[in-house]
Length: 171
Image (cartoon, rainbow, N blue to C red; front, side, top):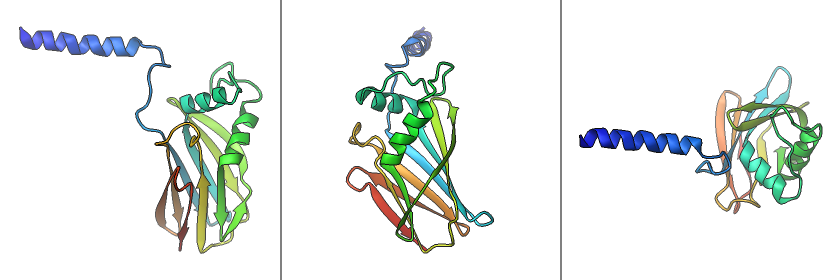
């Protein structure tokens, strides 16, 4: 009978937690993921930046920009410009020491996360790749921003944190 009570208790907990409002739920890690690929044929960098929407909403609420409804049916027409305005302030790419202009291609929503897509055109083969990413450092002391670059059949990563928001890779 004890196993049955334990089973019922666990199932009851699962049901209770699944009924909690989304704002009560939180992901335990504060992390963003950025995948960068060098396209040799197009001489470009293809960038995909994954951001948790609840963190994005929290940031914009904090600075007084509310209810953008990213990825929801009621998304405001200003959502893309609000998003790219923030990302332009906190996220940059350097190739051989030169900051490169990112072209925003759009976004996609995937299970509570927002993927923002960018491209950097006219990128010749390079010796160094650098990135600055202070995304959500103003919100979370434990925020980590991972940058993964695939270049010349090799994948290398950077881990950026509040104490080191910028780093570079050499080839």
